[in-house]
Image (cartoon, rainbow, N blue to C red; front, side, top):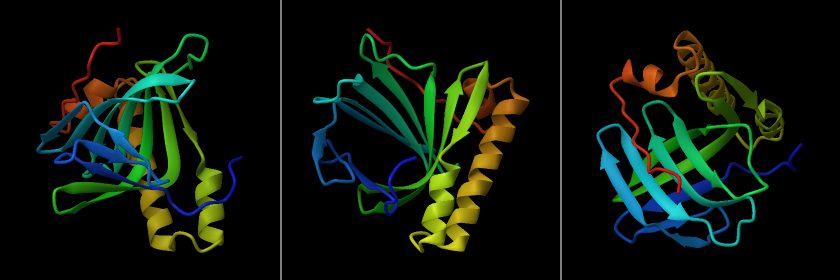
Length: 172
């Protein structure tokens, strides 16, 4: 279990081609792309042994961030996509995502696992999130799990029913 911490806030700044992580570290982004349903980013991950590149979609209407990690040899994980439950708002041209602890690990077309609900409940108990934020995070999780399960855990099929098409680069 992770140490108790306030919700992590990350900033996505297309104009500056920057992704500012929760610790304030600025990461250069190779590509940002805005679509009516969300924001895409692709960037290398220098200094990370586990993965060397990531692609993410922020989809505010679903309260989710979809990430495809490009794992380094020897660090592969049994997952295709990692879904963070987030609250997203715009600050001018910048997108700000607040991570609400709960995550979904998706093995596309096979299965999913919901993780870190314990972190959400600890944060609620410690007053780091409100009851409304915790309830929203759980409702977002349930909606995603139900949508994915109803479509055979096929991310593309589920999102197509919502008129959302996520496009990804091809792993090298």
